[in-house]
Length: 407
Ligand SMILES: *Cc1c(COP(=O)(O)O)cnc(C)c1O
Image 1 (cartoon, rainbow, N blue to C red):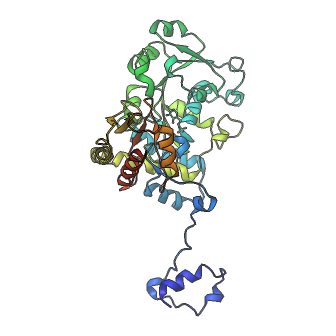
Image 2 (tube, protein in one colour; image 1 turned 30 degrees about the vertical axis):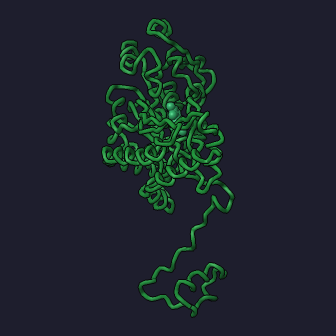
Image 3 (tube, rainbow, N blue to C red; image 1 turned 30 degrees about the horizontal axis):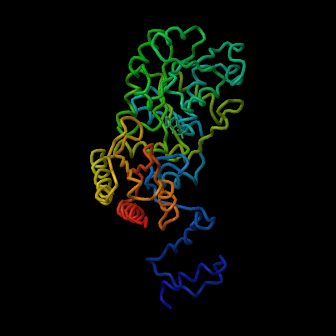
């Protein structure tokens, strides 16, 4: 029997050393017998896996962790430590990297928004901490958060979870009228910065003039890498970012960074502390370390080179599609959030008799399965920043096949 066959055979034997004893003679070079074959759990469970030509969508599990992140998770899984001590040390490092006074790892940007606001509301007062999300005013807390109407697309629920009342405004005049003694913070959602009447600079200036903390959600807003520190340097009181989107850390991790007092108070509202609004937003040691390493890796990335790689991949797909009769392609880069080359594809339905739903369904059911997202023009959008090397060729070929397969 060849060595390979023997090794293959081991999998079928009970896990008892005695049975195979004598059958195998490991050479010195084989001091570590091979690890058991990795299980393909998605396959075992019948869960569809796919090429992600869509982007960092939460429901699609957003992004794949870098090797370094997976290593950090594996390496830390076999040792105990005190959760608070780990948060202290990692928080210091993240704060240095993001030019913030302080930072902490949270369970996503959403929980960062809740915990940051909880910190503003309660400070270090234990009674207030235990009171959230109820009776804010009775417990002596402020109880309102102001934000722009166009920034309310759902993520403001993270603020509302603390029990505050949200006040939506449109103009500077509205804003100045809304500010009062109950105002806890003024929140800005950066991805909709261009759809509101008040920009991030003016929002902050008005908050500072009124002595109110300004807070900001930049969940999906790297690249550019400079956004990691831009809002800390500007003077925002807290900044929330997702760990599992373009940063490619653990999907359920995120970062809250900002003023020392607020982060310290947010920590008190968080796991492992019981009787807190954040007890259920636990982050384990593996995710804390994974987040840390992902941030390190992201900052050290050659972003220009990466951008060029994305442009090359988009070109491969664009070149395959643009000459098809009836197809229109456009490369766009969203100005804020998911700031990466994005190919918009539409087609003349009188020339290509295929709806976008049918097209996406065929991609999904194909082999390999592929995900893209539909666009407002009746076609689809595709990005390449979540592709593995070489997948752009597979994706280009499949798109073309299905657009030509309408007879
Ligand atoms: C994704 C996203 C969030 C939530 O981030 P998680 O890390 O999934 O908790 C919040 N705000 C915006 C604008 C987002 O895009």
